[in-house]
Amino acid sequence: MPASRPPPTNPLVVFKAARWWYLHGKGGSDPAFRWAIDWARHLATDTPSDVDRFDEFLVCLIAVDFADEPHQLR
Image (cartoon, rainbow, N blue to C red; front, side, top):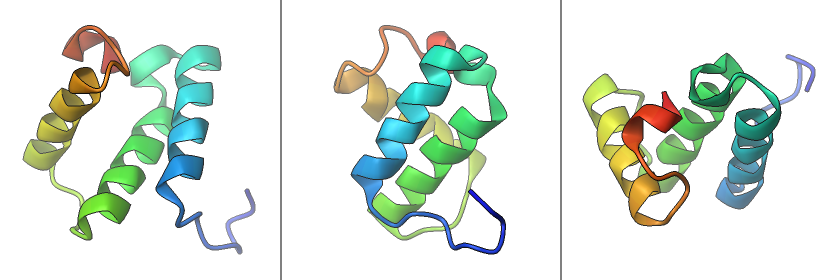
């Protein structure tokens, strides 16, 4: 996506992008994946980025079967 365009605001679109980067990138350590997850959390909670909240959000992703273990998302 060009930097001149705003990022998507639909959390489902962002999650699909995150999933694609997780599967086709470097897993949970891929910068695009991490951005997509953080942006989806921001959209869902309307709060700025925060490392502690990011970790809590990873736990939520485990709860909905996005991954089996938190380390898989890092």
